[in-house]
Length: 156
Image (spheres, rainbow, N blue to C red):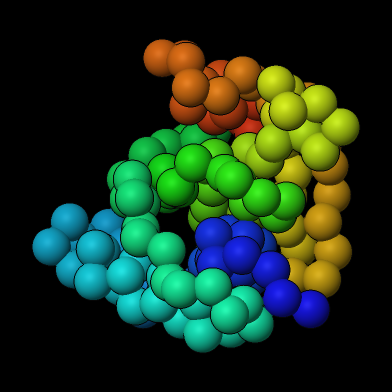
C-alpha cells in the first residue's frame, strides 16, 4: 500500500534504521556536521520505499538535535509539517536501559485535526501504542511539553 514519503520516514525508516544500527546511527546523529547527510539519505530512502508515484518531497524543516529526557540521552527530530495520515510533527528517540532506544511520535489526531496524539512505535515497527493526547502543535512550548509527557511515561 502506498503512503506518503513523510509517513514512511516517520513510521518506518527513522526508527528501523536506528534500531538496526544504533551503534553507528546514534553518534552520527549527534554530529552536527554528519547528521544532515544521514537524514537526507534516509529521507530519500523513504521516498523509494513509500510506494507512491508522487515526486519526492523536499525535506523542509527536517533536523535533529540531541537532548536529555529523564536523565537519558535522546534525539529530538523536527519533521516536515504533516499533510497526510501517518505523518508526524516530532519524533523523540530516548536511549533506554541497555542501550535500547524507545521511539515516540507526536502525530495529528485522525479524528480531530486540531489535536495531537503521543504514540510509541515498538521495535518490531509493526506495533504502535497510543499513550495519550499530545500537546498542541506549533506553540513555543510543544517540544518541552512532549518531553515532559515522555518523562512521565518513563518514570518508574
